Image 1 (cartoon, rainbow, N blue to C red):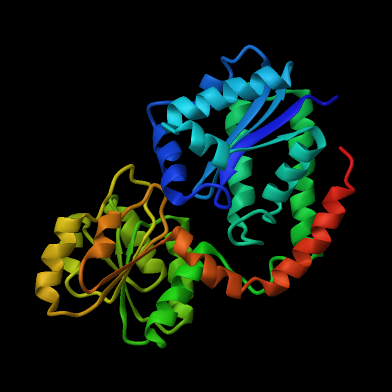
Image 2: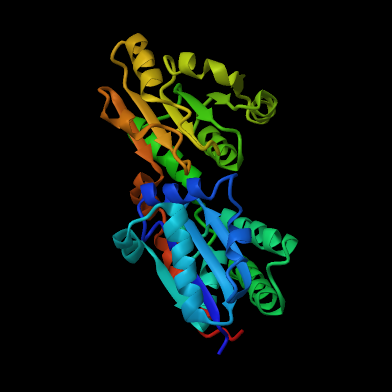
Amino acid sequence: MMNIILIGMNHKTAPLDIRERLSLACGDDINPLKEIMKIPQIREVMYLATCNRVEVFAHALDTEVSVERLKEFIFNHGNLSAEEMTRCLYVYFDQDAVRHLFRVASSIDSLVMGEPQILGQVKDAYRRSVELNATGVILNKIIHHAFRTAKRVRTETGIAGNAVSVSFAAVALAKKIFGNLKGKTILLVGAGEMSELAARHLIGNGVDHILIANRTYARAVQMAENFHGTAIEFDLLPEKLRDVDIVITSTGAPGYVITVPVIEAALRRRKNRLLFLIDIAVPRDIDPAAGDLDNVYLYNIDNLQDIVDENMKIRRKEGEKITCRISSTKT
């Protein structure tokens, strides 16, 4: 017996509000790895948290007891009900757990199959575990094998073809809304990797007027220079909402950066012009209640699934081939 456990929830099993709740609960005030390492039965562990999944991958002395303790951890920190736990959590053991990790690292299990960000996120999660001495011989071997498998998947298959990503899907949605993005003004809130990807796709679709707002203004300036956009002070965000056509947000803020009162104030100056808001952050950047306002259309990361699906047919075929290979992999 390997005594390997993988327990978690993802975009397929848990709605955005539950993933958001757990993400917020495991913010700056708590180090999930340190908490999980206090469970006596767990010998090695890696904790992975992204906008679309929260997973614990562990080697345990007693898998049954460890699963119950991990469920208690998620239950307490995520403020979940027993019904939500039952509905949203999945648990894999031994080969099934390893196989799932391989699928995650290879982006087969992602909202956007073939997206490159997840491998970097798994590597970051592993690095944090190593820094805390939370992994050992068993997990190190499995995780490095997962990295090698993910690399082969990207280089030997067509899963990365027909590029799609959450940012791509956001821009595709914007294009679907307007038909043509030329002449439209887009405001990007946040200046991280997701915003950079969105900026590239926007430029590729003919957008020539991109505004970039970020709490660290210097970072907004740097990104604006790279994409021929215009950096704005974060405090000017409410004012700029009066003029833009589409807002795409992807910050790491723990609370809403765009609230209903801010949007209502902007709407009074927009003279019935529609405002489209695309929130691809987890936790969410925009108060969901904004979607109830007249002349406001609000989309979140889960709403992008249909857009993603339209671009996934070829990747799914490649994914089926890869799944067969992973299923026959020995660790």
